[in-house]
Amino acid sequence: MTRRPSALGAVLLAAFVLAGCAAGNPTKEDTVEPVPTAEHQRRLAAAYVEETMGRSGVDWDAAQSQEYPQECVLPDGSAGALYNIVRTGAGVRDPEAVTKSVGKRWAEDGLTVEYSTDKMTSGADRFLVNGSGGDVERIQFGAATTKSSMGGVSKCGTGNAADLG
Image (cartoon, rainbow, N blue to C red; front, side, top):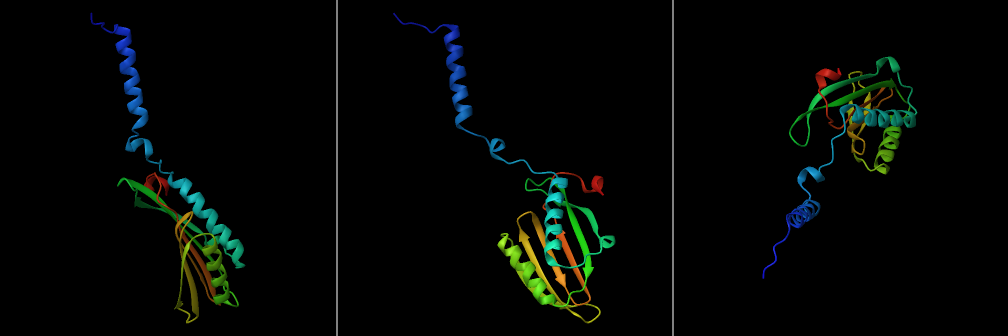
């Protein structure tokens, strides 16, 4: 004589099997990290720019500060937004030393760092350091005897640039 499972037993067995399959096989949606908002990314980048400004010893001109959103593409191919952060400051007596000090700190923070030089329209030598990684997509510090500058770009986040500006 063959024994047939009851209807309740069959339902419980099916639920157990399905629960086991769902728990054991995570889907791509279960493992993908949510993308932070553009505003969150802006706050991180702005804080890093401000921290660098404070450590640089440069006298920064708050009236010349700018921040503006720009379109970008998120890893999934959808549209997002990032922020450009621009600061302007006074010249420094030893721009090469200040620039190397900023770059050294960025490297200690884990950023990839590159140094370069160029000439300003005034003819003054400008020393530059570019960084990428950490809380910023990229960041640049430039110093000359006549003027200093800082530019940061946040990582791309969710949001619409047109709605943020």
